[in-house]
Image (cartoon, rainbow, N blue to C red):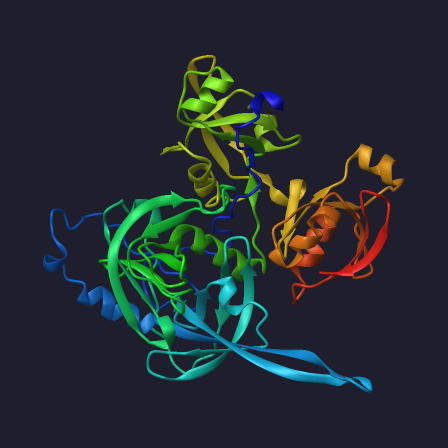
Length: 457
């Protein structure tokens, strides 16, 4: 590993699921079905903003974007100086954001952080009608959540566009409710694609200079035809307000996530099963290779599709299907739109020659699983020997900031049971956790030092 000291290692243990039992319909008015725009890639070329008509796209999108109110009730212990504990007092907090109606019968996509820990969710339409929303499911890793309201009428909804087809420099509109200012539309251009902000390559955002502020989260990013190409998620700013750039989850990835939530109740992920890093001139020199673009494979995961297909350490991935690959976020973005057992054509450079190898994606649960910002993996023979156990799973990593101070203790610990149920292996654990209605669970663990704890997280 010292040889690759400065090489950023990232694990391609994320992926995606495409449409299973659900089918895409091109015609409108299909309750419970997602609508795709008819492909039309004609662009407004060589036109300034003053010569482009934004009005139709804005008008259509405004009616599909909703205001989301998150009501959170928490209990605060009340202490008395003389008599000690005297009970709990309830405290109510209100958070707001945006959402996008995606079916005529009331399915709504928003950000996970907009609805996190909600006791009650209220959705207000553009016509000022309000409804109590039900949480269908979430994907905390990609910051996407799916809600459902039962309206007394067919609702206006956004039509999905192809986020892979957008180009840097293309005009886009951001529609949402910043600072509780309903139905706000701003315009900008696509500044970059496949932008990764976490340095882990897992997320892949569309970057735009359309003004987005607090309250826009969960709102729509649309092209000039009014097609949904992203869900506005975050801004990059030292002040918390718009300072030039904002970021959206691409619509192709969003669509895959919500289709999973509709069909399975959780997001199923496929993986290639490789680790490595992005190439540049410095890394290439350290590795002793001439290629300065692509993804260098440093490790192939056992039992993964990559191993079975014959990918090996030293291979450089330069293309997936018809997509050129220069970074891990680009690689991840493409895999994220696939599902387990899908076959991806992986083009690699090996010994100076390019070859294409078909790789069947592995189900992520076979390798690892993420729940509430905690990533798990199966234990191996050495773990069983070290902890003197026959079954269990291991905490691989912690990404939930709520548990950041306990990372050193938790990472590498073995889980024996969850909510009193034996943690036999990853498949049984992932199946159980996927059905839980809340994100908290009680874990019985053994730490790396052999200490046993029962904790809730």
